[in-house]
Amino acid sequence: MARIDEIAPDLYRASIYLPQFDLQFNHFLVDNEPTARETPAITALA
Picture 1: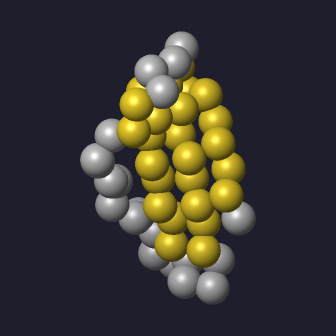
Picture 2: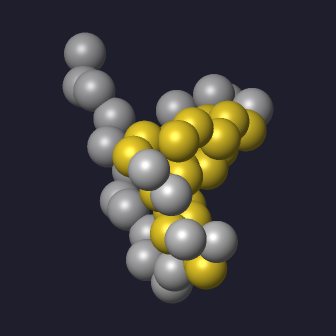
């Protein structure tokens, strides 16, 4: 499932969650220019 949220003025986060792997990818859009940064996936350990 993909989701796009405005997290600050002119700053958007596109988040893609893969439940079968419990893995999430986040991509950021700043002033309509894509950045080449990725955030590491963090999962909760039960």
